[in-house]
Length: 308
Image 1 (cartoon, rainbow, N blue to C red):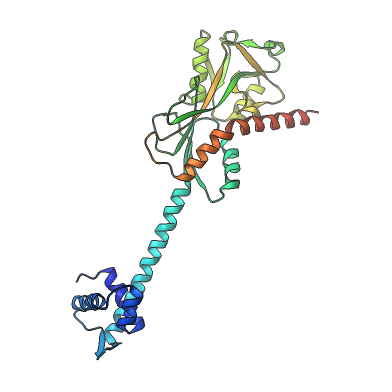
Image 2: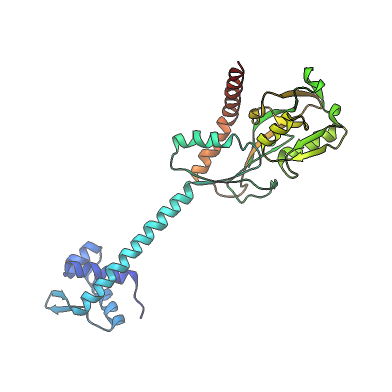
């Protein structure tokens, strides 16, 4: 038995109208084509579906059975098409992002973007370690010590790295510090493989030493509390980690070597980006630095107001 969807559709319309001429017009078919389709369906089912009297046709007992099933089948097919269509549209509205840097800024950017595109969904992941060649998501945020500009990567922000030290360290009274002066101090750092850890190790190497890691943590809050407790020092991005600012901590500019990091946005080099993802990319390129600095300035202003 080989029954096609078209045969069921043509039969159902004919059963509803019980008139070949009207059904053919409704289906935009010729009468012979419609008659052949119904005959083919009857041949497959090995029963007649209509009683014929001249040009009149009437749905018979077999036809009523087939019609009840045909309507259910066609209804389910339509429901399937609608659900697939909704799923496809939702997939097109879902933007996947891998965050290796600037995790505190992305929620702000998503919130601002959703004000103009409230139907956009985001799937965000934070890898255990950076892998800049992994393009499994639409976008990746990561940071390095140099700028990057190519056909699938753009630098969004340059920020200084400060050294966060307990306020009672003797260096806290200085205007700036040399990184080499802390060669024998314990460092509180992100885990190996994280962007900021890689950058911090690079600058320590530039200063002529390998940092002694007192503790590893991925939490800026935890790092802040350990510094306040006088247990070590840490590299702190000036803008994106502004919330590490706290009483008991002094954030020191590093004059030697000059320590900076660049935050980048990367997307699939050869892959297709849905229009919604393209809009988000353009939004980030145009506004990331502005919003990051604005957020930092607002926090710092509130911080000093709270200190009286």
